[in-house]
Image (cartoon, rainbow, N blue to C red; front, side, top):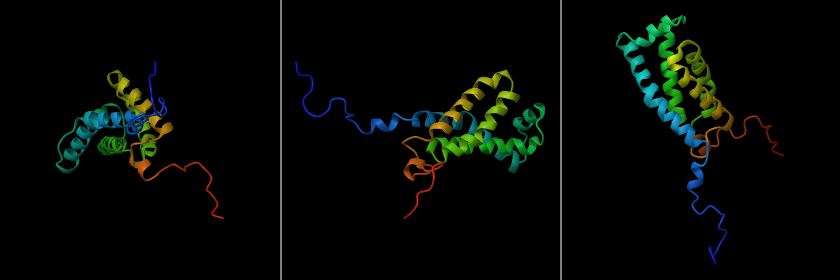
Amino acid sequence: MIEHIGGNPAANQNPWSSLFKTIAVLRIGAGVLLLTQHGWKAAEGAYHFLWEEQGWDWVKAFNDAGLPYAALLAPTIAILVAAVAVSWCIGFLTRLFAVVFMPVAIGVIVKAGPMYMEIGWLYLLVAFTLLLYGSGAVSIDKLFRLGESWGQPKKKKW
């Protein structure tokens, strides 16, 4: 019985489906979760703390954890988390932001206690995976070919 007539049946029939068979699914999913669950609230809290001089529970939590300069460190980490989330969502300088985010995830694992240890490990593993594999096919990095030649010797023009 004939099951297929024409070209190669093993060939990908829909070229758009191959775009999402990359690390982009993990990157976008982690970025959206980081932004909606942590980054947006953190950036909003940092804004109210810095410009409206309202109290913020992150500063108290950083003080309780024994971190120095909690009034400076808490807004810095909040802005960093929001920037990493946006970077992962759009795929812009993904590897750089993964490296920048790793100390934050390690800090959560070490200082935040058992309640946040699992989320710290998950985000650390996501950051490590994005560091290894980059941003994937659906990203600004791929669109502008950012980071493709990093670590490779420069080609001579002659």
